[in-house]
View 1 (spheres, helix red, strand yellow):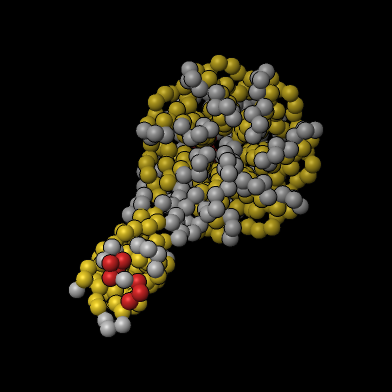
View 2 (spheres, rainbow, N blue to C red):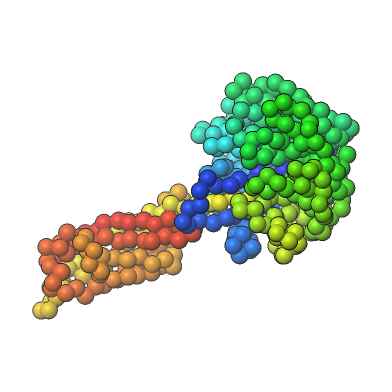
Length: 430
């Protein structure tokens, strides 16, 4: 099979699974599903529900998905338009649509997120995208039908599979020279590829020979082969490096492979025509795209059983899962009016407006706390549809006029979706 047919038929490349360096106190673990029929479904793995669908007017044939190592950007290839969609993941908005080669397929992010590598199936090339400028800075010729792509842990090498029928190869790109420095013979019709977290192995899915090849990174030689199911496509590795999960597209199952012994342990039945698979950062769950079912199956990796299914868009192909930090918030405080009373003060119209810093979108339904500059509580209000919180406060004489005339602070504690923020506002005497 070839990619041109896969726009409406099949898919092949592994999704990038990333483990954050350290867990933040707030944030979400999100899954990004590239639906070849259009749109990227965003799954909150805490609830296993699709929270939104990200659409890119410049690219409506999503194919594969990857997420940057810091979780703040997602990258999705669009096969028909020849574009790479860039998503700001904390806000799930499209930041850019970058022209790459013809029929882009696989996408991988370098450690640290400095570069993204995109295989251009019809061009026989790999586009190197600088993530600081969001431009293609190099194009590397690799050979016929480049498909799967992965970057080694040290960032020095990129491994590219070639979707060619019969015994084929993997090209190795030196990331400093942006040139092919080696080729490695693997099985028949290699597609997806994944790198181990310890940097010692690369694993290649060979859909024509129904197996996976283990490549030693140091010697660039195949050191093991494991048989899996019929026409395997995608692969994901457990964080501890002991297991591989391989989708069998014509067997409607996922093979669980012991990577130490290079032997299949069992098959887990999933949806119709599974294509890609990704694991949560803790390795507890595997998510599988089912191309013909328009669903994602959830596998509990402790028991290797399917625990649920999520409806997504049409013809889901790629999937990437990562920890995504909260979106940065911005709080702007206004001015309040101070009115003297016999036994105290009234502070009228304390207000602050809460928005997403990246997009400027108002954040509604969140609590804003107002205090004096010395920390005395004033009042609390909830932001409205415009992101504005407003309230009045009755204040004791003990707080003091001088303190009130120094103004007030407004603070938002934040949550898993939005980071905390604070601002200073003025108080004027009526």
